[in-house]
Image (cartoon, rainbow, N blue to C red; front, side, top):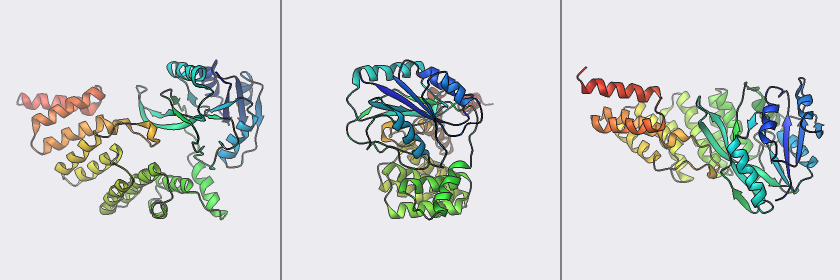
Length: 359
């Protein structure tokens, strides 16, 4: 077993910080909390858990703040969290076992990040992040927003997950403001920053600008494979919003040049074809979605419903429109195995029951 420093950067997190730190107690050997300008009781709460609380003037640069927290760490490994993250008991135990049994060893530990949950606590968005890294100078953060440490050396994947449990919305303008500041200052965006710039523009419904940024990102071709695929999905949403369906479909099909079809892409193509009334080809894409397992280790944004419930429920609709009522009902039952309380599944159950009885 080797030593582990838990590093957080925080600002005005009084409502969640204690919850986060309580969920990690017993895991770390050293706790580093870097405050970037809180005006609430965040600093006082942090000092209940550690005396290593530092102030770092905010510079519109998340990598700079996180690197400062790593610089203060003295352990052999650094683990990072956000204040509104938690370790559920089973995941905390798994991380502790990893620390005891596998450290020292890997240079980077990649772990699932459950970034969004439904009302039952089931992850609806998950992907892998570099969660624990060896405390060495070449493993440091890059990027003003959506910062990242590029995995290198001996990489270990674990099933121990971090769960994001946000209690309130953050500043919706922050990331776009930072990225636009970089552009205004005349600095070229890195491929990763350009990808996220396009996504932020799309999230702010600036679809024409977003499409231009994402088209340039894909044309230059310097992006990471998974970002390229996700850029195609976001680009398609932009063109759909701009009422340009042919380009929306083209953007999704372009993603197939980067790797085998992703379930998320297949579901997007199925939706476009359903909107056109082409239920046969839509059904083909939904079946293809079920052939792609949800694998957070790819690093992509994984939407678990696209790998199960959504294709099944949409196949029910497609096959019903194709006159295959019994097969449609079977797909609805398969959908119900994923979400037995989902209103669409329950509606379909009642519909098939009523029609079978002639009502």
